[in-house]
Image (cartoon, rainbow, N blue to C red):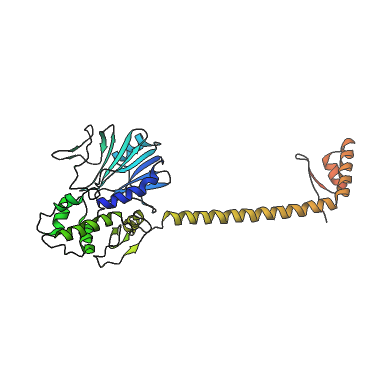
Length: 341
């Protein structure tokens, strides 16, 4: 499963809460990387997805790119999270001029660039019109088809030149086939029909625009931004698409969400504090009892102290005073031990 263009656009909207957070570190994990910012952890799985997680993942020894990120980005503030056009590319720009670029398409790649130049990358890649390599100018991939958010009805009418409707839409629109099939289903038009009528084109265009604006995320075999009525899989709603992706990729992790762990820590701390309060209250209770006892014998104690002071002035030793009065006195600390009844 790999997140699609429209899904990335929704994820980036939810990633806006990362803006203003500070970079702490990047760690290697199974299948990708964990980028830790204050209060948030972002998981990047090259070729598959990127999402904020509520789950703990075990880290591995850091790779060169993780070490590079720690050295140059630690303490810098994320000032902008964006999607490159309508492609599967997410960028996090920091206030020190560095940018982390996460390419999700194909095998995926992780690039750290500054002033438009690639400084480090997960893998070196070369295409006819594009090179990913340290020291080279970083350029974004060319859009694969028309942006469905911007396409006009006039442009849309001209795309149907393939064997059937669905192939024409997939070829000419920069959008996933699973949502284009849903467009056909909602428009009530067979996706395998060779050429739609003018009325059917209007219906397809209308449903396309609707599905771009609709947002009811969940899991339906895989994370989806809307319930796909064209599929038979059970739809399980989620509050956000990010939550759906996080749950989908974390289902195999035998751990509880971090919120639950935090709750457990808070409950443990509360019990420790309650125990400490109980012990303190007991000490206060004993102290009050001792105080009451001293107050009850205050006159006798004052008389005893007066006799001790006078005997000391008369030149008697602590041992002599102790024996004569029948009390225990420590000569070094000058502490008096008396049993009160």
